Image (cartoon, rainbow, N blue to C red; front, side, top):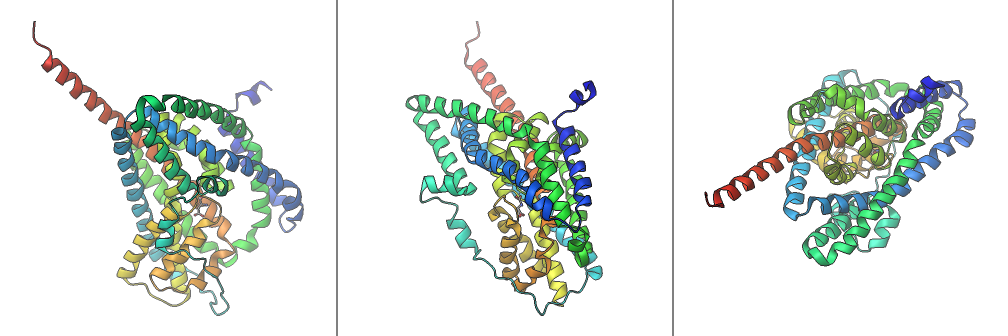
Length: 419
Ligand code: ASP
């Protein structure tokens, strides 16, 4: 009993994952029971996380901005965050394309003649327009996270500009943030059970028969995910964040496992925040960086788009030129920003990338069946990228603040007349 008490949340989540895989294996080929009776408990858990996510994103972003006290600091953190997110996504898609090209000789040649896929409208201008809400409440009720972020940024900016008169409102927001933060913790404590229930069903439903002929493509995607994780994040966390990468990965493990099983960055956001703060991120910054990341930063999705494009091209006997690859890199970066942080969203945006280079969109049908397996890895990588940004910017921004304080102190000293 005593030893059970010593296991922390990360340990319990890991136990949930392993038990989930083992029990799921027992139901291989007979997933009806798990779908009917076990998965619903996982769904309850994901629903609870989704319910908390809109208030948490709104309140934590606004509170984060309030605590930064002036718009200049928010701006400084904002542009660094965007540069980090875009930079790592570009590296991710490059890795995806390189690994995909190296492996393409071994890719299976699937029959493309009966591939059918109806692409949902996903062009760039629509994506851009949809970022801006026409109705505040419908943004909240539909969970359109980019719109919620725009609303939060506007409210936060207005509070900072209005100043004294906005103080009571700012206090209400901060108090509500504390209350919803507590609710979030209650939910997080149930995550080992959620992970178990989701994993049992995933393993039972996506048994070896789903992996089938796509095994190698899935493997290639995971090699690229792991390369990005161990090379890119290790380097950024170590050199820019001043942190031991192993320690970083260890602290992020609960969120990583949860993202892997839930396949939703947005649903994982509460856990990502908890883990990143434990890893040393400044909560004031991470409350700004992480909601943004869960919505726009998708390195795993970008890698997946690169590997999937090369695989689809190879099935249709098309050799991609360097120009087409550069187009893929550019559109995949934009498409990954527009991808919602929910299960399976990456596939919808993949259509945009394929269209941009003139690849047949119906090729998506060739990989759709195994999407869950691609999605698990890409979501886990997506949230790891968000966490790495929080750790890196905590250090960079901290240093910038120190420099600012030193400058102010020097200026004050110079202005004080010598006695
Ligand atoms: N499921 C991913 C996420 O939530 C998005 C995707 O489908 O690529 O991060």
